[in-house]
Length: 116
Length: 115
Image 1 (cartoon, rainbow over the protein chains, first blue to last red):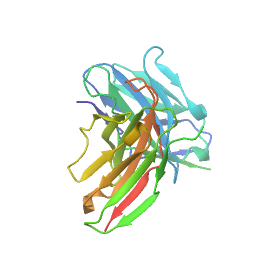
Image 2: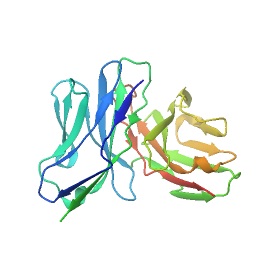
Image 3: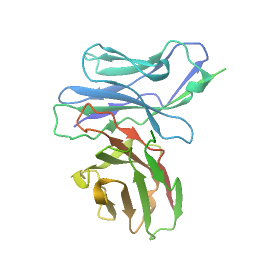
């Protein structure tokens, strides 16, 4: 079975500082990894995904994520946080090797709070 | 291009009543998914349509939930009768070609409260 862990319920960072939102995963085969963001009163917005190739993936709004197979992690990063980045972030995984179909398995979400 | 839309945005019903949620996918997307987030926990998969056919309904919690996608366009998710534990946010997503690498695009969700 596939699973995702987001160990931090909330991350606090000052505007202008770098941010990291952590995600670890467990799959039986090769993972496909996704990050989504939910702004207040909005739906989930796709940020970026890792399928194969370069371990550093760049996405929307200046975000990037690094795939680390040995640590089974896919942490979301941004070099300089903005107050407008404050939102709920979800990591999700699909297992290529498992007959789990197209469904995404999500973590519990991490709330990012960027203070001015 | 319009995104995934869901109706209503909020619904408050009494236990035992029926509620129907609607999802309109992105035009041209054959794949439609329903997910649910209950009480601030993880977002969980409910089911997957390819056009009008149910491809995977392994996440449907019980037979009080009925999903349809007549004509392969919009989809409805009916809960009958609703129970307290059904409260949560119901998300719909769509993707163009399906498969493990394809991106699913989500709607704004319907917040269901069962009293």
